[in-house]
Image (cartoon, rainbow, N blue to C red; front, side, top):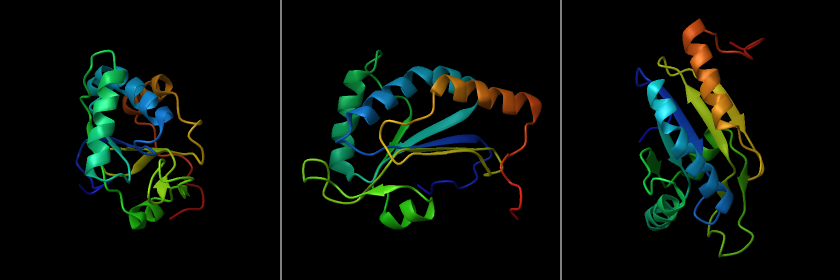
Length: 158
């Protein structure tokens, strides 16, 4: 999977810390509750971590158990390499112990790309405890779509 490749659709990329993080699990469970709203807006969602396949599959099972519907209907990707984390400008942490992870992992981030593949919304965090409110985010995407709201924060950029 190539993150950020133009698809002609709205895309949301949610970077999560990995299997070790209960805050990530709870946030993605909340995201699952918002999927009907995001589907209505035509937003395709993928959550990605640097975990390997085995840890990602175990995380997915834990996540399913956490959701009201006991299912996850958005894509879960894994194996985000350090080079891509750096390319996306993510905050990256060293594990505090082997229980946490055995490699550097990304701190949370969220990107919304418009159908042209432009970054319409960007949210970075250097902590597991700060993430965007998903209801406000969905309302914002609806507003952007209905009003042809431009990409903001571009002053002085090419």
